[in-house]
Image 1 (cartoon, one colour):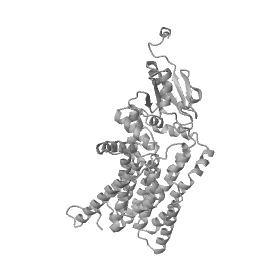
Image 2 (cartoon, one colour; image 1 turned 30 degrees about the vertical axis):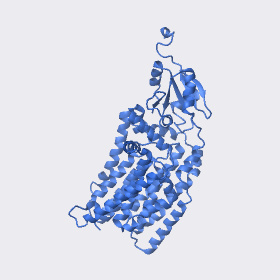
Image 3 (cartoon, rainbow, N blue to C red; image 1 turned 45 degrees about the horizontal axis):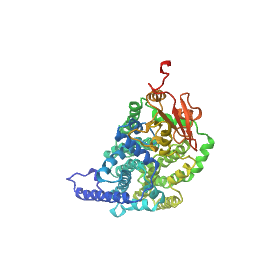
Image 4 (cartoon, helix red, strand yellow; image 1 turned 135 degrees about the vertical axis):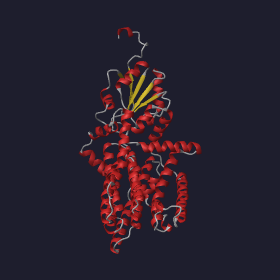
Length: 502
């Protein structure tokens, strides 16, 4: 079979391949339109990314900081939402729903092309059917999650690796490496996955080239160039924007100090079933890797469930969002089924064993709740933040038009104010800057409770303020759950009759 990526206008199969590609394009448009019309459940992640996009469009400093200097709401998702927002405004559509619809349709299109390239077009709709049938995948698709952007490069890498097994084209290896590099800009779990699968792909390709007696010099550099470039780019952005190359990693290290055995056991019980869902697929993939001609692609997928399971577990224990885990797990599940359909088994016994194993995985998938349900149950322990109107009404009774400082990433997203008229957002707490600003105008600061939701419970300045305050801060109000409103008692310049005594 001629590979579509290798065809030229002078190839005899070019017309047939072009028709196939146009068919896939029209199916992509149809899927995107259907997904856009489906009801989606909102997520906190979309709210935060939308706040970042609004801040970027307004030219706020917090938007630039939040774009690159965090691991919880990564840069590629925010940039994709920024682009979708521009398109949505022209078409009078909802930007969040449009982003999810395009990312999900793009992901399904890559999986559909796997079937369309190596099997009859009758088998192409199988990934779509599986996405509808499997509850975990269906619930993930019907969630307004911007992290579906991370599923696109993973499905693209899988598609090009499948094509490489069919034609051994260097182009497909380059595209596989490029897509694994993009995963570095999608969060912790995707970045770890990119590193692990890059190693696995190199080892498998080296073995395959040795078997085929083909030269493999430079393959390591080829596979790691995109990964290294994207990772280095992210660190350079932190250096340029925050003047600290490791800024986005510091909260992660501080949160690690709060983890103990009791916390680990608690979260292990909470996420046992989703973690098990990821790991049970190792059984059919192991059979495919050992008994079929799809060994490199199966090896590409094998480390994915372990990375996802570890990321799921430690993200929950550290109190950080499970960025992109649900979309990546959905793509992994669909890819495992597709690989079983594409593989040529050496013996019927192996095919039967792999089929039974993956059907057992599918049956188990019907008993596992979506990650959003588990996240909702976990979020019950957090206190509700005070309403925006309650904060401004209380302040205006005594200090009309005083502005309130909000520090961090998730907290400013709860009180968006692109004009910074009542709320001023900053990603990092700089005491000297706050004091200098409080000398020019009356300022307040809102401090959430130290429950690990908005900042680490230890080694963080907001945790210190919540517990001990500051000599130049006065606690004016405390809401149920531990939310505190502090007022800077530094008199603004030229407003104190005692200025001459300073």
